[in-house]
Structure formats: structure tokens, C-alpha cells
Image 1 (cartoon, rainbow, N blue to C red):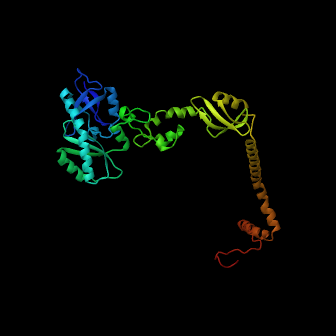
Image 2 (image 1 turned 90 degrees about the vertical axis):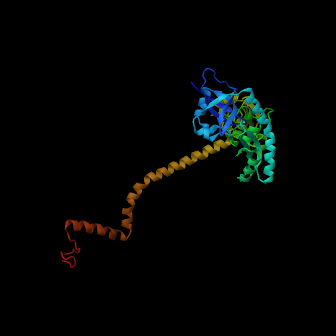
Image 3 (image 1 turned 120 degrees about the vertical axis):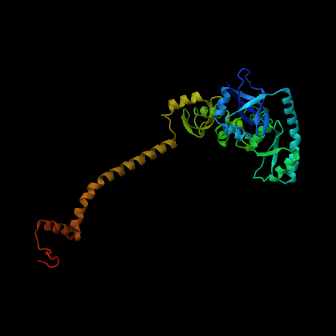
Amino acid sequence: MSQTIEVRFKGTRKAYFTWAEADAPLRVGDAVLVEAERGRDLGRITAVGDVAEKKCAGGCSGCAVGGDATAAESAPKPVVRRATREDLRVHDENRRSEDDARRKVIERVRTHDLLMKVSDTEWQWDRNKLTIYFTAEKRVDFRALVRDLASLFRTRIELRQIGVRDEAARLSGVGRCGREYCCSSWLKELSPVNLGLAKDQHLSLNPSQISGGCGRLLCCLKYEHEFYVTARKRFPKEGKTVTTARGAEKVIAVDIFRERVFLRSEEHGPRIIALVELRDEVEARGEVLMTAETRSRLVAAEAGRVEQAAAAESTAEGPDTEAEGPDAEAEASPAGPAAARPHRRRRRRRRGGGGGGEQAGPGGGEPG
């Protein structure tokens, strides 16, 4: 029975394969040789069994920069074999020669006067391909550079553009916390980070203080974001006016770790109170004490409700007044009786009475 394994290569590149030898299962950390594009490559296992199957089932869209697109679309390929000491020796030699290859690539880039920054180079284990990772602000036409590098290294050249966060993950470094970058040590899936995370945690919005070595927002801003959002729901919002035993006080700041609230009153000045005590004061005196501003607002709202009620009553009496209006206006106006005559004439015609009126004969033109 075969098992699915996750193999990672240099940087953040990874792929999924299968291992058919159930009698000698592979373990995390073992080095294996796998089938790569136009040759073989060496990597180390980072997940096996159900864990690797769940990651692979989610699709390879989560794979970091450098993943093989053709391997993502097809079924996982089988592992060739375990890596031997000779394989590891060749792998180490390739890694040592990558620095020299990177310097040569940088020289060729300067010769062709291209606006691109070469971040890293990676040899395939069998040296059938040299992958060059670079960053650039705009699109770069590197066709002439590829031909020049192919004649220099006598192998297949692949240039791949990456972002600044992926560059930091590949090159690694030390963050402001004094430890290695999370993205290059253990955080293999880079999730989006926005400025709203810093606002919810009431951190400084100065980019120099909340940015990492890559120039983007720190990945660790997302670690405790859920805790901050949940904890602040227990506190009153900053800037809100609450009614306590001292009257109306404005919430200046909250301390979610020490369970304290900073209040300020115009009469008594600032003070610090525990969240539990603040709740007791608000529940005990909140319905009794009322500021002048709040009282004036309530009076204005009550006056507005009275005016709306009076307007509603006048609107309800309107139809009765309008029903009596036409008769009074018809009697007072000289045109009133004349306006009522056509209705009487129509009624007389329907009854058949002439009443002094003219009727049309069968011819339709002469009076009778």
C-alpha cells in the first residue's frame, strides 16, 4: 500500500509524491530522490500519511513560489528511492556552487542593463536545470539574458519572478524579535496581512514599526488578532461616555491584560478603575444619574415626538373637513350652481324628461 508524502526543496518549494514500499516506510526528515522536470531532484520529507494527503487534497495552489505547475495538475509521482551518502554529497556540492552561479548571473544582468534584482539561484540535483529567482517592479524582457546564461552554464535556464515576502522566506534572516523569520523557519503558508490587524490591536501605524525585513507588514500581527477582538468585546468602546457613580465619564483607554479602564470626568478628572467595578457602578447608577447633555437630548426628543403626534392627529382629521368643503364652496361661489347643472341634466336625460332641454332626433342633427 502506497503512502503520500510531502517533499520540500530549497526555499519554500514543495511537491507531493507517493511511496509504494510499505515494509520500509519513510519518515519526516528523510532525504529522497524524486522525478523532476527533465531529470531528478533531491528533497527532504516534511509530512507523511494522512497529514500529507490533507495538504495535497487541498490542491497545490497553497504551494509557495517555485512549485511545479505540471506536478500540481497531474497525480503525485512515485519516489525514485532513498537518498544515499553519495547523493547527499552531490547535493551539498550543488548548494556550495550556487553562490558562484548567483554572482555570475548578477554580472550578466548588469551587462544587459536590466532592472531586476537576482535573489537566489538553485541547481537541480542532476544539474539539468538552473532556476534563477528575481524580483522586479515592472515586466522584464530577459530573453537575451536567458540565451547568454544558457551558453555560459551549458544547461537549461529558468527565470522565475517572486515577491518580496517570498524573497525573505528564501533568503531568511533575523527579525526584530531576535529570532529567525517565521516564513523561513516554520511558517510555510504565507497568509495575507492588512493594516486592519494593527488597528484592532491598537498598535502604531508607523510602517517602520510594524513591517518586517521584507518591507511588508509583520506576519505575527495575525497570531493574536482573534484574542484582541474577543477581549475588547468585554470593554466599553474608547470615546464612549458612560454613567458611573461620579456622573458622566468618558472612556479614554482600556487595558485588556490588567482588566482596567481609564476614565475622565470634567468635574473629578481622570481615574483608573477595574472593569468589574465599572460594571457594578454602571448597573447600579446608570438609570439614575444623567448628564445635562443627555437630559437636553431627551427633552428635545420628547418635544419632537409631541410634534409628530400633533401632526398625525391633524392628518387623521383632514378627510372629514375636506368632505364638507365642496358643498360650502359650491354655495358661496357663483359658479357653484352652474357646475352642478350638467349632472342634473344627465340624470333627467336618463329618466326621459326634457325639463326644457334640447334632445337630438334620430337624424342626430335637428332638434325635435
